[in-house]
Amino acid sequence: MLKYMFLMVSFFLLQSDAMEELSWSEHYKLSWKDFKGQPNKDTDAVAVTASGITFSYSINKYKRTQKVQGFKTLVKAFFYPEHSWCKSDQVDIHVLGHEQLHFDITELHARLFRQRIANVKLHEDLAQTLQDMHAKIEADLMAMQNAYDTESEYSIDVKGQEKWQDSITKRLKSVSQFKSKG
Image (cartoon, rainbow, N blue to C red):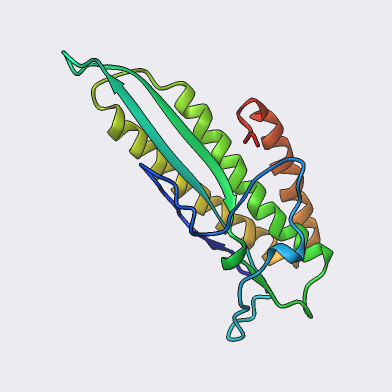
């Protein structure tokens, strides 16, 4: 049985460099060497993926009126090697594919968040709007990660796993203009 651990990571001012992190990239797929955390021997899980979305923003206001004149955001999908682990004697390429899809689901939600941000209009409560949007996307991400594990039976249901793989691949393509860069 596999379990997924989701780290909700929010940095509103500065991103921490203390934790090792891998940015999502369409050109890089996870390998077991990326899973550097200590396995939990007290669980049936054979692998855990720790991934999350980081989010920061800045809002520019006119000095005199304090009216919002613009804003910038940074949204990234990360994998955290030191918090991800596997029981190397119990995993295979199929399990790795399951774990990769957890990371891909994180990227999907980073793209959906960027898409929603692109449609935001300037207004006085912009900071609260951005924070609310972030909270909503994090909740949506957690719900999808849980549904994925349930419906694929933590990768045991091969057809369920394939269904999810196809669905996430299509959804990533549908929002490709918002993909992570770098």
